[in-house]
Each structure stands twice: as structure tokens, then as C-alpha cells.
Image 1 (spheres, one colour):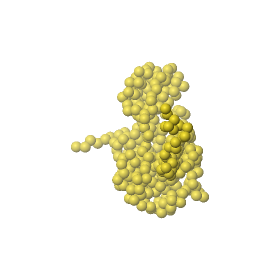
Image 2: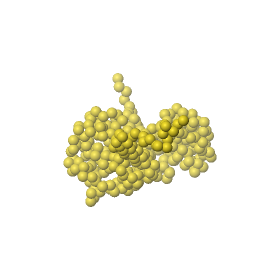
Image 3: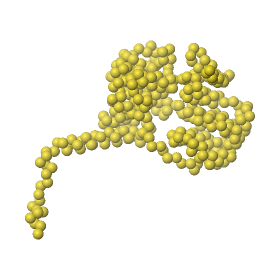
Image 4: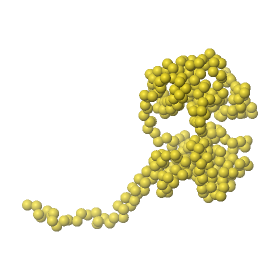
Length: 354
């Protein structure tokens, strides 16, 4: 017997699932019902239309639940861009579910430290960043006197982040997905524009003018003009879409970010690529190619949209090191063998030793 998952405000139609609360717009929920991405989107939709403060026993004035509900409507939260609001809602809703009934003003630092100690490093860092932003807003509204996160410091986990695609990993993907396929177009857009997933799925033919692609990044709000290389234009022209948006689903709709990730993972599986090959890794591969071509950090940032050069300089530093090492070894190979023999100094000869 399979248990049926019943979720409030969820409706299904022709295989698609939607969140619908009275007085709120429909929100499409990605993935399979009960999957992590589905539940994360469900929690975000649930949090986006919170019940009025005091409407439930949990949302009493001064409680964690009431403060979080009010925070969602604040300018501090509404000014967040990209996928940040959904991610932070999911984190806060999990905390709200367990501790929403407690008084916010009495939240001690020891409780925060103990809770963080139960989390993996990356999860703990994201949680603390989310909760710290919430607490600072609470202080500005006089809901708390002290910031229980103020003295908490966390070491940055040692990681290179997303895996960077190698040329050996690009080759099998291109072999399995020829020019003209949707998969090859997705790969080309990631590799030749160096943009994030959320920006790539919004790209359309209307954004290409005079050989340049206009991009407004959802995460940074940066406006970019990126030259469209002939390789990319060839793939765009060869791929039928029948829609202004370049990447669309089988039904002609634009991809949601999570839906696109699932589809791209399937394309990678078809090519026999390892799990670490993700779409974001194409952005890193594109930056690596630019650095290897001798581009400066400022030139790379003009394409990637990075606000600071710190991240970009990682790629240029690695490329410079490799180039200098090759040049050094080339000089060694070019030097004649006889030149390596030491020339005796007449003033310092073994015959002078008494």
C-alpha cells in the first residue's frame, strides 16, 4: 500500500501541480510530488502568502511565527532578488514549523550555536546568513533588543564549489547531442555566454541585436552586452524552438529553474557524464576558457557580470601559473646540453687549494 501525500492548497491538472490559496495567484510547483524541490517550492509558496498575524494559535504577538510572517512583507525581504527569497523562505519556514510558538525576544545565543552544530558546514553557513538578516530586521523593528547571532563566527568551508567541466567531458555531451537538439543549445548557451541557469532559461531571440546578446542578470541586476560568437549563432539558427524564448519545454512553455536542472541532468546522464557535471559548471568552464585565452580579470568580469574581481582572479591566476610554467619548461628544453655544464673559474681552481 502506497501512502498518499495530502498537501493543503495543492491542485493538479494534466500532470502539472499548482499551489492555490484563496486570494493568491497560482504558483506552479516543479518536480514530483514529495520530492525535495517540490517540497521546497511548496514551503516557499506557503510562506509567500502567510496567514494574518494572530490568525492561528502559533502566530501570537511576540512569537517567532508572528515575526517571520511580518518579515515576509517587509522592504528588507522584498528587496531580495533572484532565487534568494525562495531559499530563505524555505529555511525560515522549517525553523518556524518547529519553534514558531516560542517568544522571539528570549532567543538565546546558546540555542543558535547548538542548532548550527547539528548542520553540515554549508547548510549551517546558509542558515546563519538567512537568520542573521531576519534578526537584524527584528532589531530595527524593536522586536528584539539583542542580536543572538552577533558573536557567532563560522569558518568558510573549504571547497572549490561547483565542478568545472573539462574538455574531455564536453566532448561526449556534444557527441550524443548534435547541433540542432535542445540539449546542444542548452550547452552552447551556458558555455558561450557564461551566464547562470536562471538567466539562460530567459534568453530569447528578441535579446539578440546586431550580433550582441543583451542580458540583465536576475541575481546581481547587472546589464550586460555579450558578443554572440559564430559557433553559438550557428547552433541557435539550427535549433527549432517556435518561440521567442530559446529554451522551452515540450509544451512550448518556458522552463522553471528546477525543471531545467532536472532536464539538463537527464541530458548529462544520456551522455554518461558523472553526477558532478551540472549546468553551473559550464559557467566556470567558460571563465576558464577566457582566462586560458589570456583575458584579464576585468575583461572576464565584463562577460560574467561579477561585481568584484576576487572570484574572477582565481581563474586568471590559475591560467597565468600554467602559462608561466609552460614557458619555463620550454626554455629548459631549448637550452643546449653543453650550456648546463659549469665553466671553471681560473681564480677558483682545485690547484689553488694547498
